Image (cartoon, rainbow, N blue to C red):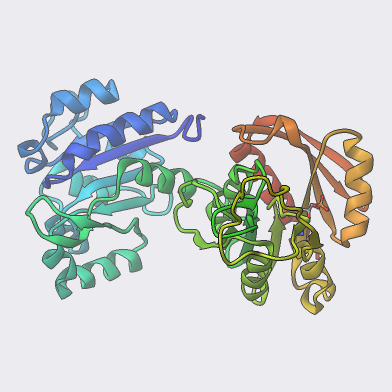
Length: 405
Ligand code: C5P
């Protein structure tokens, strides 16, 4: 993916052991297509060298406001005017305090102060010991930075370099990357709440065995991520899948269709959009044995009779809020043939304004897909692309329709 293609990012390093993660972060930003200009404070040079950061960013690193390489000797102006964002990672407690006060006695803080505040956003990934993090001064500084328009990316929790355990670690490079990518996406669902079902369901036969399917959950998780990127508050109700939860998305793990229905009904009560991507089992074993069904020598194999599962999408689409237009419902159809005709029929049967068709066997477990959006007006094809790219297109379509509703 090239989610940061054309973006010019100033990556600022301040003093903290998390600087070792900034090397990986720099690589990840470059790999995603960004141009990365590294700026380092003197304290950060105690932890990692400008040589390392220059090699990874493929650009000279700036460490001083007196750097004679700039013809006008104003790197704080030149570098900030060229950038789409300044990302401070790691941002030390001391550097936050200095930002709050508008300190400008070295290049990085000077650049933050001199940046055009309306067009060059400031993103901050703090990193510090847990006591420093919890200190009222730090919390006060964070609140002030947010009030001044900075975006605080939060911190991780766990073992710290000092040997203590708690909050204050810098986020992992891939988490920061996800946040930076999200930051640049258009906020077409700001203030909305979105619920997504994803993955397969598992219908138990006994405590050991059950019936499930090949859905990987990737499409649903991509939609959850795209909706979060678009500014929505997102819950994903997930069947058994082993995917990482997208940043900022609330995840509710369930197993059976009935559990998925209960969790979904609770979540959609306040939602604006519901997207049903889960491959819900149509039937479940009529009885679930409390004990493992044993293979007895000579006895015939057991027979399994089935009973129908609730249709989650149809149930939600029939609810009063959906019928009143307060909850916009989107269904999926995985077909093996006659996609357009089947998707059209399914949209009417499920009673939803928008149904997304895809060819099941060519999407299960894959990272890319191809979609057919079917509504009352007709069908539009979204050509083959990664599931995340398609998810963003679908989210834009949903936002457009929601705005018209
Ligand atoms: O009827 P079919 O399973 O093909 O419909 C697919 C759509 O309905 C998907 O959006 C799927 O998530 C949803 N569905 C559901 N509950 C079911 C079966 C399907 O929400 N029991």
